[in-house]
Length: 402
Image 1 (cartoon, helix red, strand yellow):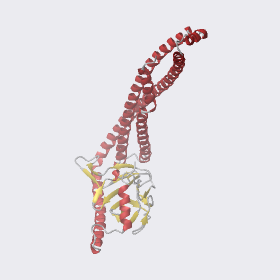
Image 2 (cartoon, helix red, strand yellow):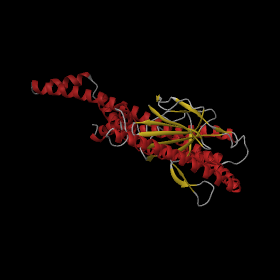
Image 3 (tube, helix red, strand yellow):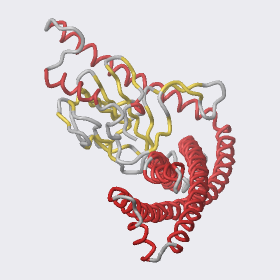
Image 4 (cartoon, one colour):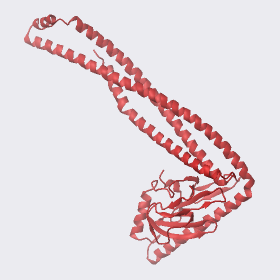
């Protein structure tokens, strides 16, 4: 007879083979997508670095690109470590299941062999007939007939159970082998990425040391950047003040908006973390907020948005539908475009060949102008991008789709 433990292990094997590991596999798929995304960002950053490397001079743009790639590679290595850990967990679980199913299958085979030997000893048709004819009553004969049928059915079911367990066992062994190979492959790739990371950190330190010799120039560029930020902030405050005055004249509070503009603002807010990037391809090389200067000691940089490095000739594009509120020039910072989306404003600066004007209604991904390329500074091409909610500065990375 097959014990309850044997049947329970069949269902355990089925659940482990078809259910719970599916959740683990989903997590594994997510890790692999994240890993591929990081690898793609590294490849793109490599393209940008290859172009700026044509100028052998150490530049701040080159250092920031390299720092961004180091951050990306760190993320890639961390994701790989998570993948290795998850694969090891799957390997351990599968090894346990294989061991349990193997033991259960062996027990079933022993029991089945006993039944086969018993059936062989009692195979004579005359003995079966005598078994029925020797019954004391018709009811007893019927019960004996039912017993023989149940015994035959039981043998058939036990054979099917053995076949089921064998199929599960075969598949789990194959899964185990595939997972071991995958873990080995990821670990090899992780070691290679760690070597590349070490090389990049050495290069980063070399460039930083070279830039230390350009401290005066870097201070001058930082002062210019601050002036640009101040001009942008003044224009944004001017827009807010104009709208506030208009709202006051109309007896309203906050910014004066039409129903369509209010709807645009609601739609914008609902698309947090899903709005497209303001360039087709790019890498964030300077983050939002206050952070240490990458070269100058005891000096901080305050970025009201993010700096996105992209390729030469790239076009800035509207991240959402809205209306152009301002198009203006910035001393030392080329052109800027401000688009209103209800209560929200998006700001695109360091542009040339602007393709829109004040009052234009724009659609998502509409071309706004070309991002300026500085031929005198390593051919760096950087879009400055900001998001405001009235007078409140927001972190664009919390809004952009990844």
